[in-house]
Every structure is written in C-alpha cells, then in structure tokens.
Image (cartoon, rainbow, N blue to C red):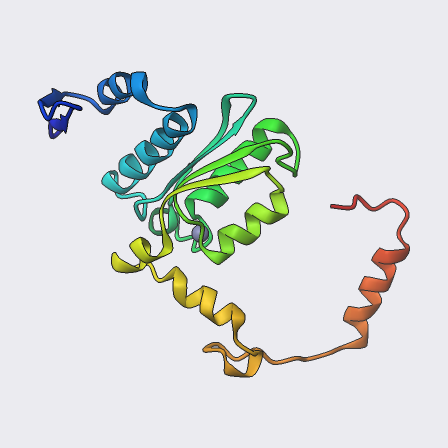
Length: 186
Ligand SMILES: [Zn+2]
C-alpha cells in the first residue's frame, strides 16, 4: 500500500502508513462534521481502490454515531442503483429497523445525483453534508448534471422518450390503496 504524505499547518510533510493513522492525527483539528465526512471519504477511497465501483462513499449519522455506511458498488454488483447513498440508506434502515431516517445526518463524499437525492428525500433525514460537487463529478466522467437538466425539461424534450399508456386498471389500484384502512403510509 502506498504511503500517505500530508503537509501539516507549518508545511512539514508527515508520512503515514495507514489511512487510520492519518484520520486519527487530523481528527485533533477537525470539526465533528469534518470527521464524519472523512469516514465517507475513506469509504469512497477504499471502494474504488478495491474495484467495487466509482469513487463515492457515504455515512449516515444518528445521535453522533454512524448507523449506516455505503460506497458505490455499481460495477461489482451489476446494480445501476448501487450508489453510495442508496447503499448507506439501505444499511441504516436495516440497522434501525425502519424506513425513515428521522433526525439522521447524511455525509456523502459527493453531491448526490438526482436518484440519490430522491432516495434521500424519501428517507427524510434532517441534513445533507457533501464534499465534491456535481461539476467535480462531471469532470471525472459522472455526469449528474445531465440528469438534473433532464428533470427540468418537458417530457417531450427528454433523451429517453416517456410515453403515457394510461389504463383504468392502474387507476383502480390507486383507488383501492386510498380506501385501504390497513395500509402503512409513508
Ligand atoms: Zn447517486
């Protein structure tokens, strides 16, 4: 494994053998948000170095504890939805035994793509912290901006045609849901 070389505040170069050493050393000067973000960044680094997927990591925090972790696993699991945030949300919800992330904080190493932003809104955490932004992602080949732009276009102008095939049967299922007194709303 490569050595990690870091400059301290006086421009001295410090050498670390392991990422954990670096995290522990720097943690003396970091805010709690920066410390949690470093955990997300470590996941992004490990996941991409291990060939699991793109360089993205995410942790979910509740009451100052990490309750969910994820890194991108798209290519290693053949799952285009296995983005770091989605993986972390699934982990957190499994650990908490709930489908809502009330009072949780999301720390993601990159601004969420529209899919993950949607998943995050469904999970309803209280705040999102991100490190790299969508332009940084586009610059290394992950064009989240394109999907954001698609969302704001009329359906008829989008790259992937979206065609209504309205059907009474589909609507009837909605009506039944509305009337169902045993449903679990979310
Ligand atoms: Zn995403």
